[in-house]
Image 1 (cartoon, one colour):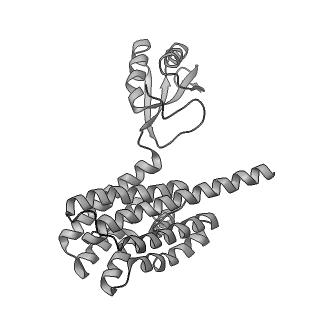
Image 2: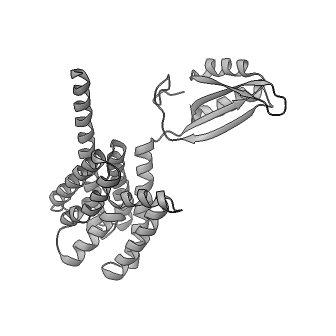
Length: 288
C-alpha cells in the first residue's frame, strides 16, 4: 500500500512538472512573438489580450480572472483533479507572462511571429492537455455544450474564436491582425493535436480473409507487430471466420497491403486512424 501511494505521489509530481513546462512554453510563445505584435490566440487568452489592450493592465491578471468562472464550472461538472491541474497551469502561465513581458520580442515580422509563436504556443498548450489539464477555460464550456447540443467541441470553439477575432478587429486591432490571428489559431490547434496524439500516424487494420493464418504469419514475420484473431461468422455462408486485427504505423501500411494482396487478393482490408496506443509489443519509436 505504501508503494502504491509513493507511485501516486511521483506520478502527480511528474504531471505538475509537465504542466509547468507546458505553461512556460506557452507563455514564451505569447510574450516573445504574439502579444508584442498584437496577434491573438482564441479563447480566454485572446480575451485577456484584448482586455489588457483596452485597460492598460497586464494580461497576466486577466488570464486568472477570466478563467475563474470556467474553473468553477469545471470543478462542478468535470472533477477536482482536472480543475486543480488547470488552475495550477493558469497560475504558472500568468506568472510566466508577467515575467517574460519585460523582455524584447524575438521578431517584429508579422508572418514569422504568427507561425513561430503559434507553434510554440500550441506545443505548450498540448503538453498541458496531454498531462490532464488545460490553459483555457473556454474548452471546458465547449466540452459541456457538446454533450447537450448538436455541435462538436471544435465547432463551438471555432464559433467563439471567430467572435473574439471580430471583436478584436473592431475594438483594438486591425482586420489584418484579426486575419493573422486566425492563422495563429489554426497552427496552434494543429500543434496541440501533434503533441497530444503524437506525430506518428497510427492505423488500426481489420483484415477479413479466407487465408487468415497465412496472412498473419507473414505479417508477424515482416512487421513483428502483435495481432489478434476476432471470431466472426459470414452472413451469407454462415461459416465461421477468423478476422485479423492489428495496429501499424503509416510507413508499415504499404507493406501490410502488399502482403495481404500477394496472399489473398480478395481479402477485405479496413483501415482507420488511431490517436494513440500503448502496451503489447507496440513501440512507436521503432523504425522499420
